[in-house]
Image (cartoon, rainbow, N blue to C red):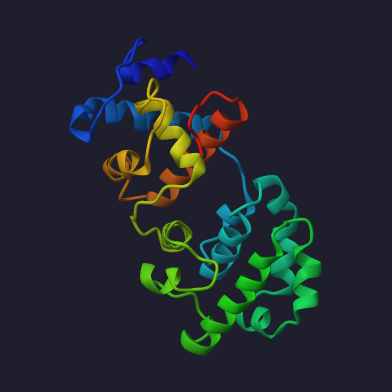
Length: 220
């Protein structure tokens, strides 16, 4: 996509810190990512809801499983376990039968335990703070932040593999090793605080495109 060159130029230099990235570059970066999303964004079932429980389940499923596999199981899983209460009360064997194909069964166990905590400590609802979400079994800080973003449109910054790929591609094209400490300030600076849900969806789809085309180095 030749229009990507508008951001850092046809022979871009690698910024060593955040102040070296100009506001105009940030504006063009946002425009490129949003343009791609408008034209080729994915229609995914968890993007059609802002129900916190459904978002929570999707984020756990997506932790170590590709989008296509999750899409095949997501609706059936929620049809059987439509609330934290029903998931917490379900036997492990039945949960596993609906989880089959998603891999890493320990995530299904953690999801059941998390649902139990929601029932006992949060009235059967998904907690709304980063600290409470992060404390749930199997939920790290990035997943907790993603739940806040997609369920409540909360403007918080986080990094996962697709997001990492996008920022390496645009802002560190010549650097061999890029740490999250270098990327995170750019994630914060470019965040759309009015519509973080839409912005992160766009980043995720752009990152998925880059990784599928093997056009990014250092994505991990």
